Image (cartoon, rainbow, N blue to C red):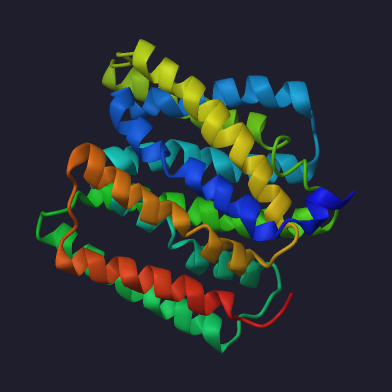
Length: 278
């Protein structure tokens, strides 16, 4: 009984974030982020269906949100850099707040301040894309991953509180193929380029198990016991570690303006976490 209940719920989220922080590195080494997203979904789904099958509305909706994340984030890591992609992913409090608002929750003052800081951070990054120092497509993909991640957090929180904790973790994973499979197919047809395939397949096994099946279950276990905004803050361990991996593996050094944007995103997440509620 007691072990799981005695463990701080945030520990599950921290463990998940540490595993997620390696996604960018795998994306770069895969040499084909589009096919990597497909293989990640495929191998994760093969493992997930052995553990838990679900046809619930909760699984389908959260699975589609994760599918967008799976497709967009590897491209962001390759095009914008591992660290920047991870921090753009953590504009999630903005999108989580907006998603919660759409579902009838009213943000408080701290939520509004947090959202404002995220918008300033996005503007700072946008200035650098205009100057040509950062890929605008990479930034767009990073923001898209943030939108999908924020939506997943809000949706997973809502469904998990209703008793669908497993449905929004393992149960959701097979439905990521709704997004990643047609994306990979369209990319292959339009560009006539689906190679290399062995490397993304091998890295897809790693992402499918180590950064998907395991951490999403851990995250669902944690997010059902803390607020969505709090979960976002705890998980900011991910971009910090990702930035470290980007430097160590690829010598990716952020500019001063980018560091300011990073700081604003982290501060925004902390402020949003202080919002009232359970």
